[in-house]
Amino acid sequence: MIAETPDLFHRYLDRRMRRARGLGNGSQFVFELTGEVSADAVRDRLAPLASRLLLLQAGLPPWPRRRWEPRSEPIAVREEPIDGSLEAWFARWFGEPFKPLDGPSLEIVLGRHDAGTAVLVRWLHALSDAPGMDLMLRLLDGEDPERFRLEGEPGALVRRVRGKSRFLRRAFDVHALALRQVLRTVPPAWQARVDRRTRQTVACSTFSATETADVWARGRELASLDRNSFLVGALARATVRAFDVPGWRRLRIPVPISLRPPAWRGPVLGNWFSIVLLELPVRQLRTIEEAVETTRAAWKTALARGEDRATLALMGAAATFPPWLARLLLDGPLLRDGASVNSSYVELKTGASGTFLDQPLERGIIASSILAPPGLAGVFAGCAGRLSVSVPGQGDATALLHDALVALLRGDAT
Image 1 (spheres, rainbow, N blue to C red):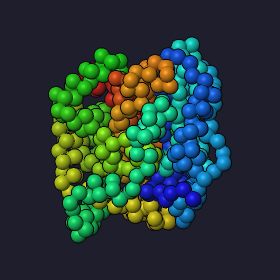
Image 2: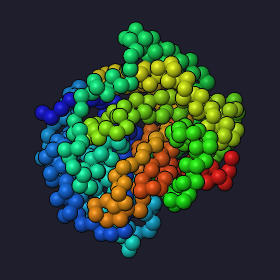
Image 3: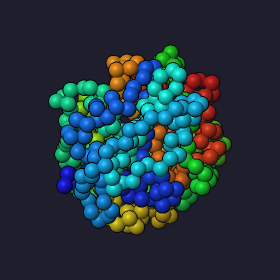
Image 4: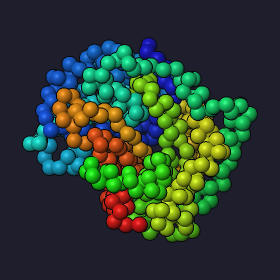
C-alpha cells in the first residue's frame, strides 16, 4: 500500500466524465522549448523521481476502496512530429482519452517541429492538481528534492482554510450554502448550449511578454493586486459578450482556492484546494470594469459566509459517498452541474529560470477537462513571463468564448 488519498472527489468526476465521453478527468500542460530534448533523457530524469514519489506509479481501484496501490507499468514517454501549429497539436491531444485511473496516469509526449520541442504532460486530476504537477516538474527539471516537502498531512492544510472557525460555525456555513444552492436552482444559472456529443477541444493563445505586462497593468488598475478577480471578471464579461446573455440571468463561476501556502514547496502531488462559487448578476456585467468590481464584491461576500470552508466540507463528504449520493450532494436536486463556466488561474514556476530540461523555454499552456454542461472553462497560466489563455470545451462555443476573452484582455473590447 502507498497512502490514502486526501479526497476522492476527482475520482467521482473521472467516473462521470468517462461515462459521458470516455475521456476522463484530467489536465495537460505543454512547454514550448527552442532546443531538443530526447525521450531517453526524460526517462532518466523520471526514474529517480518515481522512486521518491510513489504516487507517480500507483493506481486507484474502484469505489469503495480508498488507497493508492503500486503498479508495475512504466510512466509513458513517447515522441511524435507536430504537423501544424502547436495550438492545434495541443487541442488534438486534449481530445484523446486520459489513461485509466487504475494505473499510472502520467504520460509525457515530446512533439518535434523545426523550432524545437514541445513537452506535453498529461495526468488525471485524482493524481494531482496543477500546482502539485508544477512542483513535480520542477523536480524533473533538476531542483533539489531536499528543499521540497514530498508528502504532507491533509489535516495541516485543511486547518489553513478552517482558520479559527468552530465546528458549529462550519456546520452552519455548510447548511447555509446548501440552502442557497437549492434556492438558486430556480431559475438556474445561465449555461451555453454545447453539443455533448462533439469532441472535447481547447482554443488557446499566448500573449507576448510586452502584451502580458500590459494585461497585468490593466489588472492593477481594475483590481489592484487581485489578479484572480481581474481574470474571473474578464471571463464573466467575455461570456456575456460572446453569447449575448440576457440581463435578467446570472452566471455561476466556480473559482478554485489553493490550500498550499504560497512559498511552501509541497506537498508534491495530491489535491489541496477548495472552491468558491461566485454568483454574478448579468445586469452588473455590462463592462469589464463593472464585471471586475462585481466579481470582487461577490468574492468578499462568499469568503465572509465561509463558503470556502463549506465547499471543502462538501467535497470531503463526496469523497466517501457512493457515486449516486455524491452526485446528489454536489449537483443538487437537478442532478446537473449548475456552473455557467469554470475558471482557473495558475502561475507556473516551472522554467522560472528561463529554461526547462536544460533548453530555453518560450511559454507554457494549460487545459483541464470540463463536464458538459457547462462545457466551457477559462484557464489562465503564467509561465516564462507570458500569460496564456485557454478555453476548454465542446464545439463552436469554445472558439467564440476564447476570441471574446482575448479581445477583452488586449483592451480591444469593453
